[in-house]
Length: 353
Ligand code: ADP
Ligand code: MG
Image (cartoon, rainbow, N blue to C red):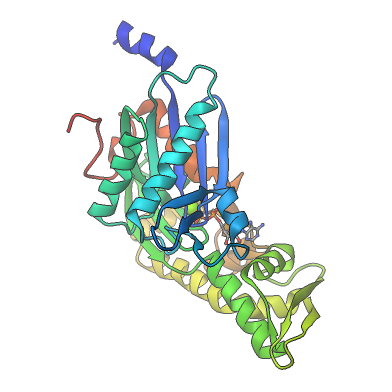
């Protein structure tokens, strides 16, 4: 049915999809693409807990701040540890995205992707933050669902599909059919834990103390989950734990693979575990369509090969793996009725609740 008023409003409506990730927050605006992609960091005054900087600016302050300022990641472990700080962050990103529009007057409709483990109270906090930031309508969607939609998986169809979303703080594995999640797992092992593994390895093998950023840099540089066609090396810089002096060590991709294996193994086992619990009909579907990887951690070299080797089915990395959740959340707004089943409880609907 043609509704002239809806059509007219549509011309002025602003639809925003947000990925409130443990490591990065992305904002997608329909017809414009990704307009914000910043670390989920907030710098606060240690005493008053007042936010001082958010996003990229806050991350820059890490390790460089005076003692009374701390930079935190309020969603680090996939749970919202600090409501007010998360609210401040969401408010900042929505307003920033809104300001980028040429005509910023219509109040946006917002879909926020949230980690699947969050409680009702946390959902409420995210919903309220979106409304108080000026959204005229806010919806919440679980991240694995948004990731699957963004990756183009047929989540609304009867046949099964599977997503493995590897972020900073959490890895989410989910099998979908008919718009719903049939089997899922959420673990607090993902990119951050790999960095942690590398820090441990450098300490144990070389008595070398390295920082999180250094660990992440080598992980992205030469980290892998499966033997590489050509193994490589990179320089680790840190401080020697025995004499306290600066030191650098050449590390090979073979060593790094060994270093990262504890967390990689946990992720791989979780995928297998999830498959074991998947009904046979859906497993048969998966053998046809395969398994899709999304999130920053999906880009670890050889991870798809490693999984493929184990599960004996096709495993591939989604196109633009790091933006799947934001794009998927945005796509929901194109036809909200179609995705009703995928939105998460409580606060679907608008401000009139
Ligand atoms: P979240 O959804 O939790 O915010 P992201 O999907 O943004 O997380 O992924 C962030 C994680 O991905 C970080 O741990 C980061 O180190 C890792 N990452 C980003 N790019 C790469 C890459 N090319 N190779 C391996 N890991 C990567
Ligand atoms: Mg994510």
